[in-house]
Image (cartoon, rainbow, N blue to C red; front, side, top):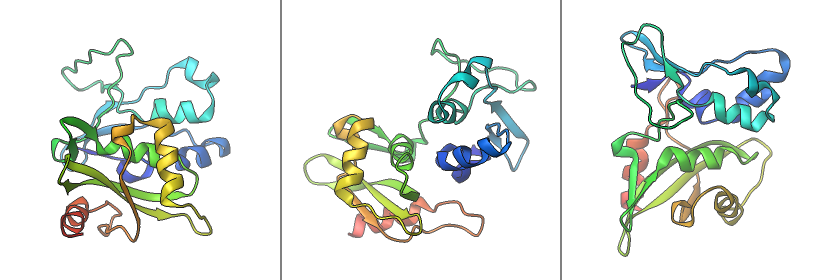
Length: 190
């Protein structure tokens, strides 16, 4: 399954922040875009409107609840909203701990200087794997790897913080989807 707003909303809250105040009402859906369409939708709850914009972005960025035409969807969290943490191939296992690359990317995207990012595993002699982040900055923005790591430490458990942040072009398809397989190859050979 791929998210319809894959690189545009779920991972880049800046779009929601920029579009919401000028009247766009964005609804996040998730599904098999090439086959059927939405399987789940982040149906907005009334109380979300009173939350600060960054919290609205987080709430709306989840995959949500069962779309009306779906037969079933079970969510065990009391909130009852789905939040996909990643595909199994995107999970980084570092020292026996599972790290969701999407969770780390979400933290990086919360920094105002980050335009695009992707996190992949690289081999690590001590931990088995460790997260490496590839980052593109917004035009005119400046931030160091140490500053981004400090930013991530405020939002993530210490073992999830990327141990290496590389500022370089991120390979994308013609439709803008990040090609993580190329980044995994870069990380293996670095």
